[in-house]
Length: 74
Image 1 (cartoon, rainbow, N blue to C red):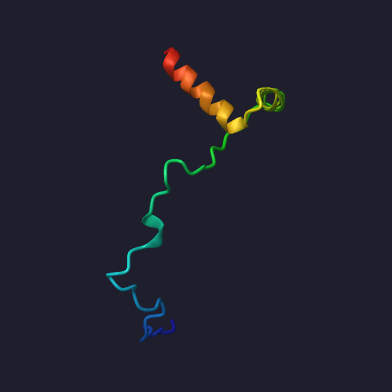
Image 2: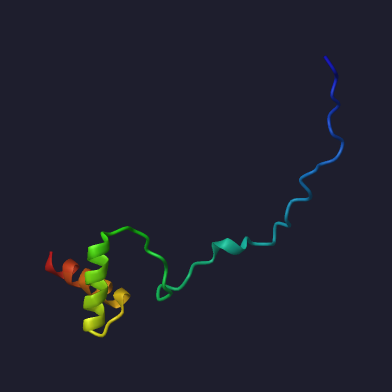
């Protein structure tokens, strides 16, 4: 069996300095829109979109209003 010698240099590079905070730890403001991914039936989506348009609302505001009403009714 062939003998393989251990590498003499670190191929990963130097670690980041300790004073440098990672950039992914900041939190978005609560008012920023974030994706909410779920699937619904195509017929429901058409009806929901048509109703939002009929009420001159965005689909986001209609969903928010429906959710608030649901929470208050329980």
